[in-house]
Image (cartoon, rainbow, N blue to C red; front, top):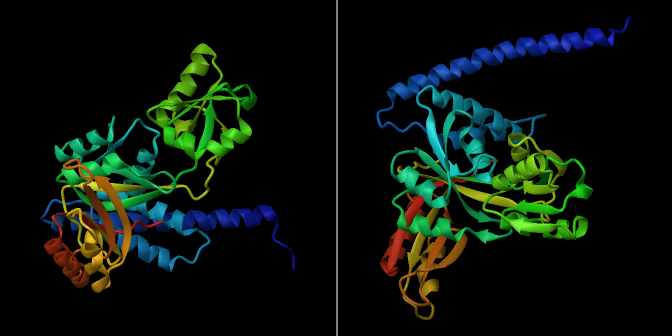
Length: 365
């Protein structure tokens, strides 16, 4: 029996891929047609359903037998859902700019390309843009696994009427970028203060004598790394993402320079509407109690009594009285679940202040 030449085998695989692509194209358009019909049947005007999309992604991850990893599967289907959603309406999403920030990366991960970006100069502006109706949704950073909570976001959640309707987690992989090609010639590095802190040991080890300067964002640092090298021939670099390298036409001199390979930032999706249960949810609350011994224990004990797990407890000064604090609490479950609702009702009776920040699906890979 004659062996099939490699060129023929290659052609056979390519022919199979072409045939599969045709099937995928038809099926994706069939899906888009159903999505459009669903949009016509809905009567509340809400296009983006975080709970439904989370259910779809979880089911696909559970059914995935490879070779594609779970993250690749969710990326593909987020893009499909985003473009199907855009047939109803192109959503506007506000995030902290400029382009090339991790906030933009979080917006892309959650909403895909089928959305219009509203680039904001501050976290405050993201909130104001959504509150005023200039954007449908906002993406704001709330905590980093190394640096802790973003206090400004917590303060704004307390004062804003907006609700949390989703969360996104982004692995933070920093790169050293420059229009310069020789790492040994770099004399100055720009980045956000948190990024400089997150790469502290790498910088001490590899570039101990290089001056470090904090700027307002990694994207601005990337722009400076481009402009100062190309216009003034100053050998500077930036710590930023790979996307920033693409946006500002920079060379990647070193990758994954963060000290902690598990470095992750959590972002919240904020909007004007509530979210229905998805089956795997989280509820965020902010509360206060009188400054007396055992007060916080008494405030949180209903969670244990009703079998509700607490995943986060963060305190912030209340800005009302000296040494008085607000407590930000994340718990497992949706506020419509019987045990969660019962626990919250008891807390409400004990707290001097309680605000529901929202119930939303737990982040999917």
